[in-house]
Image (cartoon, rainbow, N blue to C red; front, side, top):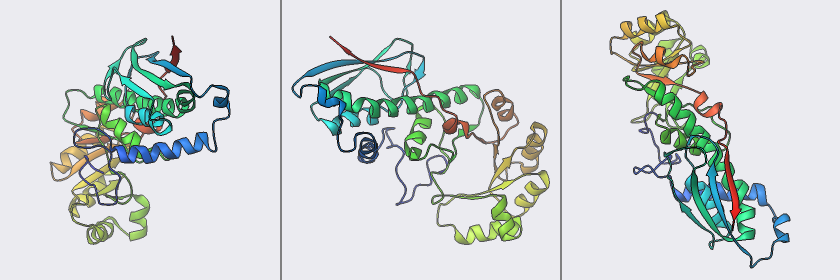
Length: 296
């Protein structure tokens, strides 16, 4: 999905126009996660009296950008509607170490059973959003978009792409069904860059973006001559990126990709490319250190 524009009837919604996730999709995802963790029942929670109630605080031990509130809350709601989560932050908020994020109250057994699923979502998605915020800050003030890729954790694509938005970056295609990216093996299979582009145009539906990956300036020229409107520059050196921008002269939207890090992204953005795709936004994620503790 490019810039959240390529959504088909079959594609899952990343976020509503207001920026909030689709709650029906959230509940479907959380039900699967609870089934994975709880299965036929929480044996340890049987030690807790059913009528016992508790109150817990959710805090962060490190600075972060929060994401995943809807998934956190759904993990408890689906187990026991009597559990209430009172948020003191929202998705996209920056938080400081020691800050309280929420109060959770309800039956003790439900709090204990849902804690791990809820925390897995909030910690992982906050880690993704925090990572995205770091990359967004690295190119602040430059006219470039930082995009995610399909290199997401299996089963967490929709969730991580929502987290990328919360962190201030942008979504690339959701999957193989909503945009066309012609890569090296597609070109080899088709026989040439022009042949691959022609086949893509014939296959694409209305509004479907067609992008082609090139690995050299010669291939870039061939793609431009073939009418390519969106071109991925794979592992180009900085000097070649500058030459590519000059060669294109605005004829195609140029996207840099390949091994991009926080240390290199600003220099890449300064070459004048339109977009930069970064697999590390969703692939190299460290969960945020959060704590949920019962309080008196």
